[in-house]
Length: 147
Image (cartoon, rainbow, N blue to C red; front, side, top):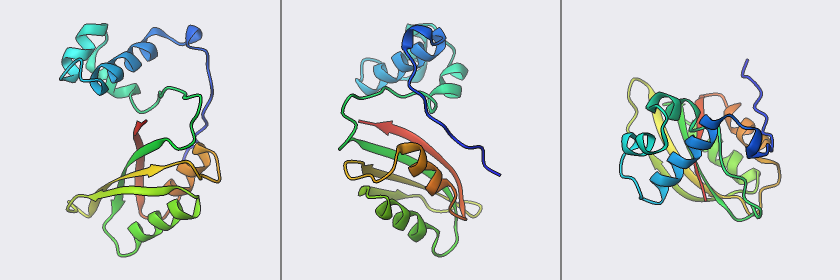
């Protein structure tokens, strides 16, 4: 059974420093002020392992989240129809698919990166993620970017 994901809004003043520093590293990399993860973590003073442990668990809250693009990385079984089920779930949730990239399956698992626009999303992000994760054949889903 999959663990239920819940999202919370938390004032950054009460977060442990490591979370703030992970966001700083992500910002340095996104804005190209640092070229490598190693350079960015050295600059903010955390370990690479701390960055990789928390990078998919913390995101900035945007005041106006509608119309924002979200990029997911999914590992899926290489079975007929799994990608179709994922794409249908995205469309049924009201998200607009912008890009789809799939790797060649290795050991029966394909990685698919999907970028969607969330302007017309009919549910909250936690429900949306859970809906996709619950599809038979989806092994994992990570949010890798939001803009």
